[in-house]
Amino acid sequence: MSRPNSKFIDPLAPPRIIWIPAAIAALFLAGPIVSLVTRAPWATLANDLGSPEVASALALSLICSLAATALSVLIGFPLAWCFARAEFPARHWIRSFVLLPAVLPPVVGGVALLFIFGRRGLLGLWLEESFGVVIPFTTPAVVFAECYIAMPFFIMSAEAGLRASSGELEEAAATLGAGPWRRFIYITIPSCRQAFFAGAALAFARALGEFGATITFAGSLPGRTQTMPLAILLAMETRPDAAIAMSMILIVIALAIFYLFRKSARIW
Amino acid sequence: MINIMKRAVVAIAVAVSCSCHGEAAAPRTLVVFAAASLRDAFTEIGARFETAESGTKVIFQFAGSPALVEQLREGASADVFASADEANMKKLDDAGALDGEAETFAKNRLAIAVRRGNPNKIASLADLSKPTILCGLCAPEVPAGAYARNTLKGAGVEVAPRTLEQNVRALVQKVVSGDLDAAIVYITDIRAFPDKLDAVDIPDAVNAAASYPLAIVKSAKNRQCARRFVDFVRSDAGAATLRKHGFLAP
Image 1 (cartoon, rainbow over the protein chains, first blue to last red):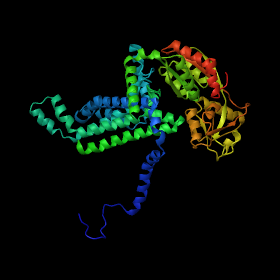
Image 2: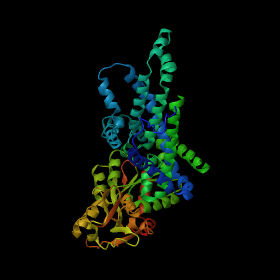
Image 3: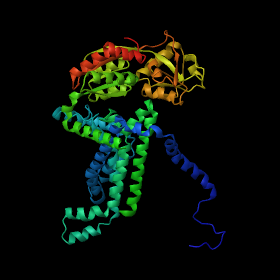
Image 4: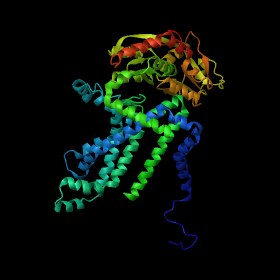
């Protein structure tokens, strides 16, 4: 489009004054990360990152976040499917309760997890008496805490994806004799793949950053329950340089997720 | 980078093998929950213990004593617990979670942590009540917070703390970083940062001396090893390490 004359004012462009609060917002959001990067102890970075504590926290974080994401997809997708396509009693209420952890302060989630899986909790008591299984403050507890916080994000995304696809293709496939599983694998999943991957990436990012529920329900034991965010907080108390170095890793991972996220919007 | 990858692979292997064998791997690992103020001393004692007992790995969780008690009451598995006060140890004892009696192994005293060179010229507890001084304390549930409150009360000083931290190491770090001007912490926490901090003494008359008990936890997976660790902390070698970090004899 060519401009008819130099005095043409784009009717959609915001007034000039808007640039001031906009710039403040941009600085407020980008500034902290930039100043963290400039404070990074580059000379000792490899050393800080190479310590066994950091390696085990990173490994634990990645394993637990991947497990939490896998679990979210495995049982979260069926739930999203039910929400999007099935009618059942109290659907609205169940949906609200199930998605609540997404907006709940995570520490409340951790306390709630203790009250069900803790030794004095409803299920925890039974698990310990019947099977001798204690979940809180173990590595599985980290996965529980992360999954509890992350799964609603996946469900919301997958449900939106399923709602957006009309279901006409499935109807057509059904008339051609495809069974429900065949329709699910060849049509339902591919039709909402973008929302599926975006939801999984969001759940992974959320699981990786989980702090409140993890420290409440899983504690902070190096090598067992001390994930990267917990290790970073602890390092701030003793070796701030190591905390910055570890933060850099999480920034890099976050950038990678962001990149994949944007790519997924175009490709999938 | 390759080194990091290697270590990550090893860590993953360890994590996987732990989750597979569970109990089987446990006898080689001693889990010690200890008050945050013990971090430097116990890390060193742990390393010495590992040398003395080849094949044993000591894992520490350092946090505020009440947080550790809460975890233990909720079923966290640990072999040894070291508290920074008797009140928190008693809570665990009352819950029936101790194996035997708790033994006091060290004492500590409070001091005011200030930046090196004391730029705000803080000379006594009374100076902490000046509105221009950003002063921090630990939360009252945390031993260091409870002791500090008793001390302030004894000295008849009222302060308006800018923060109530969950553990004493988080508090002292805020003086190191310059976010606080002063904090009431243990003398041992100040000694951990000799280039960054100075200690302003608190007179004996009002200084609430902290005493540190440790005990074997009832759910200990490896009782004998836990016993040897407790004895090691109380041995001459353990006492010397504690003294080096500024702790006093029990």
